[in-house]
Length: 98
Image 1 (cartoon, rainbow, N blue to C red):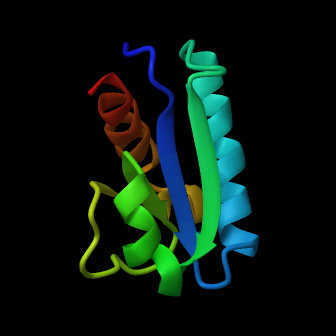
Image 2: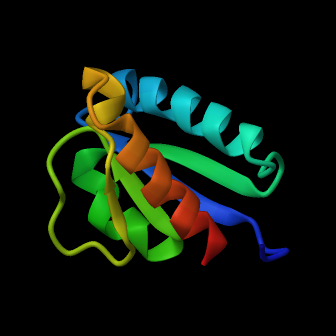
């Protein structure tokens, strides 16, 4: 694990509602795996994700995969549907280790 804080971008249609649901689940996941204090999360509207992704280590979106991202993408829709959360969690934990 690096000493540098990971910058995580969470995007949804408005940058508020479903990204907040995903944020809470991601914070719980990361804190439970010893990452408390080693990450920063920003929530943004999907329309600004390509520009904002330039400054992030990875992005989780609860909507479509935006084009032209400058960082790795994680599908956050399982946090809304409850199906496939384990795979999403594994992806996030893997990206935290990089």
